[in-house]
Length: 208
Image (cartoon, rainbow, N blue to C red; front, side, top):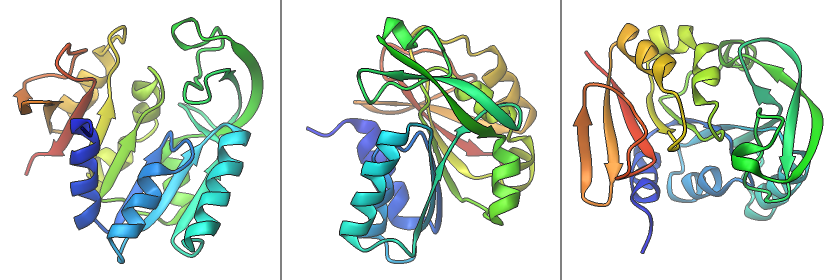
């Protein structure tokens, strides 16, 4: 059985036109979106070099080179270079240099920029954003306030059990977003985002 956030993301990808995939790994959602939606254009952000290499190979094999732009960098709250943890578990790279949830691995230096700077440089206005960066979703979005206030895309955000959601709550309240917990039983609206035992992912929708 597919996870509820996977089902929801695939439904969202089927009807959007510009997808920003933050924490893209090897490109599962970017490639699936392009396969099911011929209108879709993607910017995918992934900091780990090995994952980017596999992602590029996957894009070439599927013939989506003209529709998916892979950016090998980290999104943070500043522009420059940042230390990044490359975990032995290739799905768990993180800005936490001690390793997310105690993951073993190595620390590497990667280029970083802010979300707003990336979108400005790429002249890209997403209508759907996925952010899965192992506990630093708030840092990513703190660098994207122009996107939140002007572009106002729908978003799917991962919130793991040990995350402090104070900044996320403030950002979504400031920019007037409604949040819904994605669970096996469906979407559960809430007045704030928080680590939920029912599901780690949230659908965030701009209010009119």
